[in-house]
Image 1: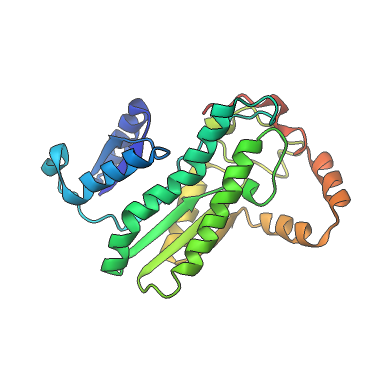
Image 2: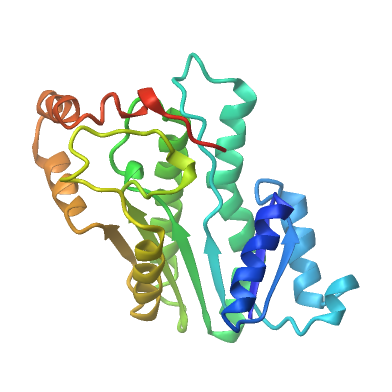
Length: 246
């Protein structure tokens, strides 16, 4: 079965109903992963099957998918301080709290998987999304450290997915110069490849494969050359038309 956490009940309810229509048992609970106390309280309820959860057959959580994220699409000086904090609490610290809540039982069972839906922007930042890029870079470091720390933990693994721009409402309005050369990924593609990576215990997955070229270029080219590539590709100004939602 699938347990969904999120802040917006309307979205949770719609997703739950969609999953149930596929024949999979699914339940949702309102939880802000950026709120440490709320995460621990909800996790305890799941583990102990207390309150309204006692009516559900909730077993041990063996796959944790950290997908929650927000982006405000502004420069540092145009960003509200509270908005900057919100990005770090949800995009980065939220993973600390959810992982601390569920990893101990996975280690006890010797059966579990931590999945992080990150972003290629963790490896190559762009202007206009400084809060998002910073949080994703921190999240990537968290998963790198966690993945290495699990090497001596049989049955428990971690997968970090770093996709290119995905066609969701989150980055609506973002434009790159050559959309035919670098088309946005479909959410279904990212989801399918993520499942495959988990099944193969793949630690890190870049989507599409051409993003590996970006990593190589960043390691060998001088900063001046990288800046020219950013300007030529349009990534330097891609957030100028941003209209996404948080």
